[in-house]
Length: 106
Image 1: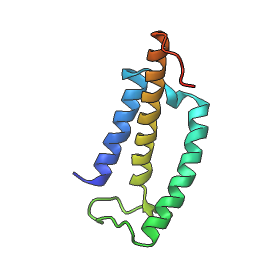
Image 2: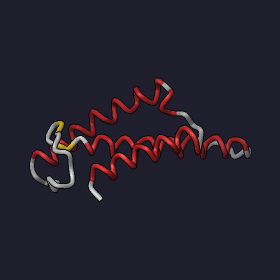
Image 3: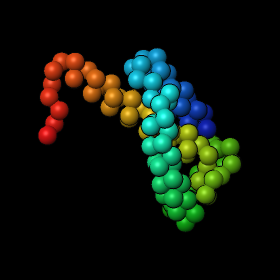
């Protein structure tokens, strides 16, 4: 399975998790997209530095070949799915614990 296919599957999974399974609906909020824009900026800096210096290399047969700041576009898809899943679980667990009356950490 190629990196491209895995990245697309990761995005699809994250969207289904957010919208249908956990029902956090983060992708429908402006605050999510604002926070994600900040994450993407630093992801591009980091990926560009790592891929531009050949610290991280990619098999040309496993990616589309489109690059943004030296890194394949699949990295943006993969990063999106990781950020969305992490935040969706965070919100879901927070709601669940607050319903149980568990106090917030100091």
